[in-house]
Image (cartoon, rainbow, N blue to C red; front, top):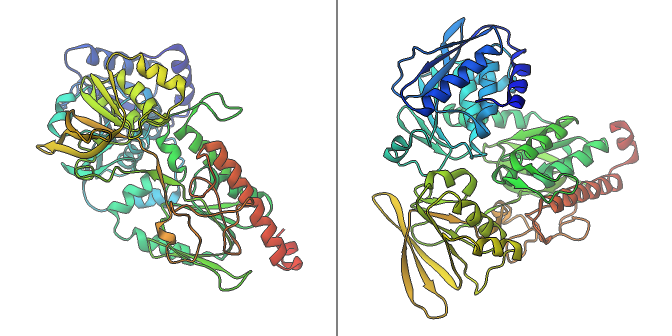
Length: 529
């Protein structure tokens, strides 16, 4: 099961084990069970502190638990093979069970250990889902730190009947005590926030205890990371308040147009940005959703940002980099059938539609790339573009047209997502030239129609927005309000690209630096240096 490279990596990691680990498998008939036996045997052969047993009695076959031999009440179960994107999750589970300390904020660990109540998590993942590992790893850590928490992590392709019975049509899909808990990516802090009702008050209290920043960055995507690194390097006290550090990077798979980096993936790049930010004295506050901006009354004064948890932060200069989100169709049925056939991440949810008929809405690069990828998995793809021609790069269009199981519909206006028995069963599409409407029978809809800037929270702040809701900036990243700057996809700057956002964020950081040294007394700068 493990190639030479994976074997070498795993052997290196297992050298960090501090105490014995037990792998207890429940196997049945078939290739997947034999592969599970082979994988666990190979792992056990790499270190004498790992013992593989094959006498489990779980209902799911194949499955196996990972537990610390000295504390068998704390365990995590994998049902199916955790390979692909989940191989790292398997490695971390082995290390944590073996006593290697997790690289997690100490306060979060204490919060996990202090949870009261019994929590039985079941979570479905796919091997191609790049959002799933964060949920898998968070639940794994919780189960291995608190004996009243269990986590069963299920590879949907192995247990397709179970996926169908529970109507799981998007991953990651998490259930708690048998009931739906959350669909989508969640980090440890987010899960704890849903379980611990006092978490918001604690976060707000921590915010209130912070001194005013010289630079506060709202948003933790490429633009926000670039801005914070530049201002921290200039010696200014810098904070980042982000709803999700990494932003849209977590929803981006292959990145091949970042100069100097021939290929990377969004979640990996997000992790690298977080490590880079961590090398500086930057106060990173995650899961911080800004809800209101109160600009300073005079130049050089303090701006205030209010957050959804009730907390407030003050700052002399402010850089807004809240990014953008997927645009919704805004038609009947879309919201009703979200995660029940309506999806936005083809890489995550595509495997759940194996052999089925689906539609991709959007003829730009994202839509055409999604259609090409999905055509390898599903039975048939109908790509629907509102314009009278596709807008994607010609090389992508040529590839798309070469595929035998793809239909291209142009001048097509989606008017409704239809469904039956709680699941999508089709689309109503109107021909914009003839006004004729037809119903296309299918089981999944992937929406790929662009982005919406995250600026609703700025309404009423006197900050100038464009007719599209973007923050208006000049060539130096300045807004119409002194001391407030903006960068990235949330602004009027054209070309919503990662490399552009990084550059614009860095430029905004330099502009904030210029503003601060021109509005703050020289003596104060010298003291802060």
